[in-house]
Image (cartoon, one colour):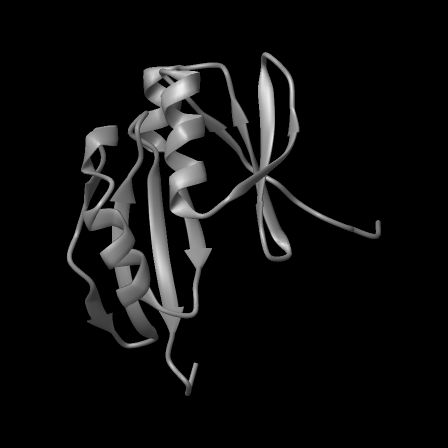
Length: 117
């Protein structure tokens, strides 16, 4: 097997709200239907689905690796109208981490790896 890509499907409780949130976060929509849209930033992408299941949303965690957790934290501070929650950045052995609970309750583990990782 030769894997070429892997993407996660993120659930949305309010599809329009979640789309607006991820656009405000800095992602771009590269494909869209009434049931799913693909978001991209750099070489990375994920699929937002017009589907919600509480058990899925509350048990989903996705790692997003970024160059600056501090920059993401500043962005999130200006996006509270989307009903999100997020933690303060935390230094951990492998770098800097913050947690973001998106509009449907999905958990993003946002990581900036340290130089030695």
